[in-house]
Each structure stands twice: as structure tokens, then as C-alpha cells.
Picture 1 (cartoon, helix red, strand yellow):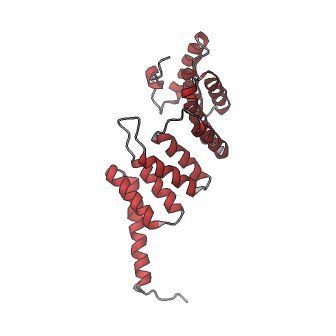
Picture 2 (cartoon, rainbow, N blue to C red):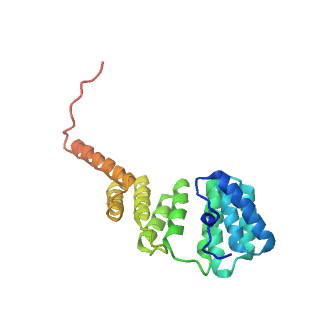
Picture 3 (cartoon, one colour):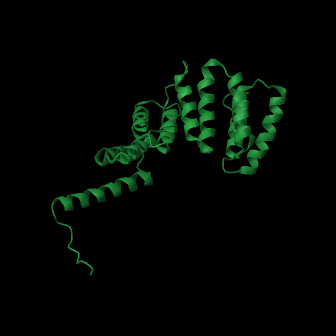
Length: 214
């Protein structure tokens, strides 16, 4: 199967669960003809993941990894990590990302760093997540339609979790510079500005006086 083929080539939209079930049938039929097609196994595993059939997803990804070429192993591992992330197994997810990043042919592209960093946030490993998001802001994208708005935004989230408010505000501002339409980055930045106003009022002892309730 051509590696550019995706579920959309089966007429499937991501929000259509019934269509993913149809994709499973189509992909399994395809794999009967060529059971060594790593990309088809990986696509099947992704369809199972969307359907929350995690055992089947893991089995399909295992087959994808067995048949993957050396330069594609890291990609299968990141997809397997996504299965563990969606199933709520965040430690296992990180273990798969660690393996993927250690592969000799690992591609230094933006999206694996952002996805791994997001999982590390769930593990409350905020400094490690910050490092990955910073790396992501410096990497080129493989896709023309992609930008690094998400990398900057997630960097802001990781800094916010560490209570580094000024740095977080700078990251959200950079996210907005990349994508002025990002409502979520704008809301985070506006919230931080309000916090700064209150902090300044506290420092200046200029908060409104409130009568004590007795």
C-alpha cells in the first residue's frame, strides 16, 4: 500500500465511527492479500484505536512493527504510543515514545515532540514536557499546513504548571503571533494578564477594601 494512503482514501471521516468499522473490514481484507504490509497494519491499528478496541489495536501495531522497514520503525512506535495514551496507560505511552526517539532513523520533526510532551504533562513531568515543547518550537514541520502554534501553546501550558507565569505569558503570546485565530491561547494570555494585575495591586496594597463579614 502506498504510504500516502490514509483512512480518507476509504471515504472515511475521522468523526464517523461506523465508517471506521468499515475501514477495519476493508483493511483486514487487504491484509489477507499481503500480510506483510506494515503501513496497512499501522492504519488498521489506528482504526481500532479510534474504536477503543485497544487489544486489537496493540496486536495490529505489533504486526506493523514486525514488518516495518528500519527507517519506519520509529513511526510505528509513536502510533503504538498513541494507543497507550488513549487507553489511559500513560507510563506505557512514554515507554513507547522513549523507544521511538532512540531509533537510529528517528525523524527530528515537530509532531512527535508535541505528542510526547502532552503525555508527559499527564504524568506531571512538567520540566521534561517543557524541554520537548521547546525543541518542537525550533523544529521544521513536515507538513505545509502545520505551524508551531501548538508547540508554543503547549510550552506555555508546561510553564504555567510550573508557576512560571511571565514565561508562560511569553509562550502564549508567541502562539498568538503564529496563529492570531487561536482562541485558547488568547484566553490563557488574558487570564495571565488578569493575574498580573491582581499581583501588582497586592504589591501596591491597592486592592479594594472589603468589609469583614461578622
